[in-house]
Image (cartoon, rainbow, N blue to C red; front, side):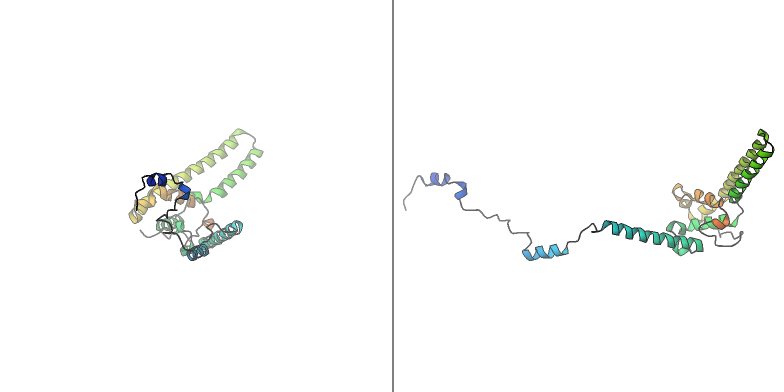
Length: 206
């Protein structure tokens, strides 16, 4: 074999497209086979349902059914099927405490309606400012009495809740004060959840 000094130069001038194709060592590794592709395609499921309207309608129907069941449970006094918030132990205690006492705010609606009717009659019979002023004083006096009554109720109820269920039962997020006064200004027969006892006087155990 004779040495050719121009051999390396000719190889260097050979076009790239004419060179032998180089095989990528990573080619073919980690890629699914045709059978694997079919299996993956068969296992794909759409994340979004095909019929969004039907899916939303079904979800609303389920929610409405659950709300109706919870409302019926509150009417019957069935604690086990009430909404989760109404099953909290300190809320049950608050309900029993409020239902056991006489609340001035319980008759707010009928008293306010009666004062309005009397005010209209008095104003028509005695068309002067004194009649309207007297009825207004009575109305605001009754509202002040309700506020004082709620304050006295909470003053006694709060330490009982803390002693039995801890500070969490009267924390701001628990809304126990709002829950207590809102129930106290409702007429007994209209309260939801329904009172557990038909008559007042059944105080919860400390």
